[in-house]
Amino acid sequence: MPVANPHRYARRRGLLAATAALLCAAVAGCAPQDDSDSAKSPGPAPGGPAGKGSCGKGKLATETAGKLTVGTDKPAYAPWFQDDDPASGKGFESAVAYAVAERLGYGRSDVIWQTVPFQNSFAPGEKKFDFDLNQISISDERRRAVDFSPGYYDVRQAVIALKDSPAAKATSVADLKRVKLGAQVGSTSLDVLNDVIKPGPRPAVFQKNDFAKTALKNGQVDAIIVDLPTAFYITSAEVKEAKIVGQFDAEGGKAEQFGLVLDKGSALTACVSGAVDSLRKDGTLARLEKKWLSEAADAPVLK
Image (cartoon, rainbow, N blue to C red; front, top):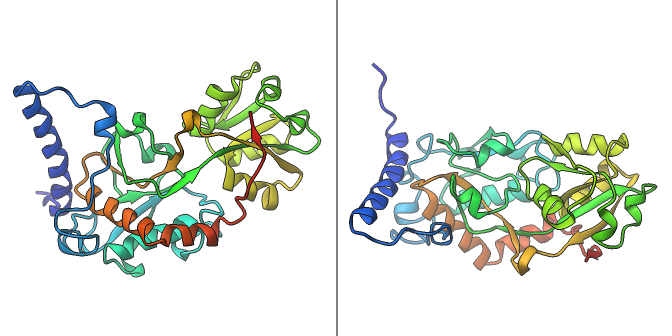
């Protein structure tokens, strides 16, 4: 007879508690919670700051007792990771993951990396990681399926094109409407393509940015949309015959942010959120951003 995993049980208690709260609200006739309310990240756990009290190592209901399982996709791209090795601690997101782990009381040897395809990380259903980071933008739609930490990076989207392509001469959003564009499926890059550019030709959609880059090199598309740090890396290291055409303003003036993804109703959300907040407050996130993403400098803004 299988033995129940006490840590899995504790994680599920978070989900059951959330369900019970919703039922209670319904019975009491309370107004239903809207997306914006459910989207709010909880603050630090009552037990104290991250790494202490109820958030300390050994107190968290992690996937594996005494360990912290962190998910990301493969390949793991620079500048977010280096050499496709998340465990190296090199690259912005690898450094952020270890900083969060340390704030929770976990050493580097306590961190277990797990490969999680990009779209699976925020899809509905139980997760096998404690948190995942893979340039995943926080959105109300995704919050319906998963929890997010507060944002750890403010990001803009950018367009890159081969230098001899007509798309490389674009100076406005209108100039991009007539070219063949591409982006990764399920990404905010694709949202910008469809909602901001609204191109005439049907855009190409790719499972991974790797496929989009290959299509760009082969001339199957005129330009692709990716986040700005990735655009700088692609044009400086991977597709040197391409250039950054420009970047886009934040939609509605609201900054797009990457957040750590957790299971919906996870018992770890408050502690992980407290750790991210403390890393932002003491300047650690800014320091890591300067170290690993310094090339993400200004690029022309396309209006």
